[in-house]
Amino acid sequence: MNVALTLSRLAYKIFGPMVDPVFGSSKSMRQNIRRANIRITVGEYFSYAFLVIMIITPIMVVTVALFMGLLKRDPMTTAVAAVFTFFLTPVFMVIFFYIYPSYLADSRKRSIDSKLPFAVPYMAAMAGAGVPPDAVFDSLARSRLYGEIAEEAKNITRDCRFFGRDIVTVLHDYTKLTPSRRFAELLMGITTTVRSGGDLKTYLHNEAENMMVEYRQMMKDFAENLGLFAESYITIPVFGTIFMVIVMSVMTMMGGGAIGPLQMDDMMILIVYAGIPGLSILFLLLIDSIIPEE
Image (cartoon, rainbow, N blue to C red; front, side, top):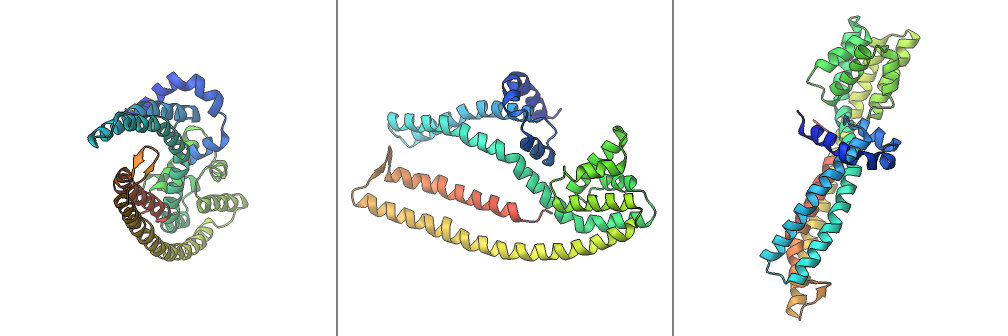
């Protein structure tokens, strides 16, 4: 059984009565969870988040205390660091769980957009052979080549087969559920074409040509943005941290200084062991947010 699903059900039994009245009616979070293809309710999601926070927070506090002990800091400094960790860890975890569905939905959007120029010709070929729209999406759902498009096709096929809904109604509803605006426009175009009795093959062929042009432009824009991120990375994390370490070293030689309970040598340790890796991870996340999915 899926461990995360089991934990979410356990967490919902514990926190559900408290979470549902506060978060259960959030339409924006429900939409983000659906677009991220997370198959649990809003109440289950936040219950799972609170359970994870309760597990991670004491682990982080103990880790920070041990780290400060290895640095041989005085008990007061260790206590202050542990208290800050105790209060800040839940804050950052709540922020993470709140934005994670949006991040995952955006990742799915990029995956769908990158596969559309290759999936639509396949759909056009099937439509040209006289295959009905529901069978087209059923075949698309069985393919492993189209990633998140196949996942969307599975959901569409599921609604048609197991809930007995017609394909036109399902496609119209999924224009509001899919994270990709371009895929939503395609579904709306298919719906309009089928309802009006138009030529689905011609429509899909035209869409395939337009999407291939957009895909080439997207790859060109990505190459330009990647160069900009490379220059920013060299400027901020590399030269910026070197400059700060040099300044702090000079201040230490001149008599030092302190920021709250942290001395300059403590600050340099934080910059080297936390600041540089943190900025690097941030840049990796920013690059991941713009890179076209494979």
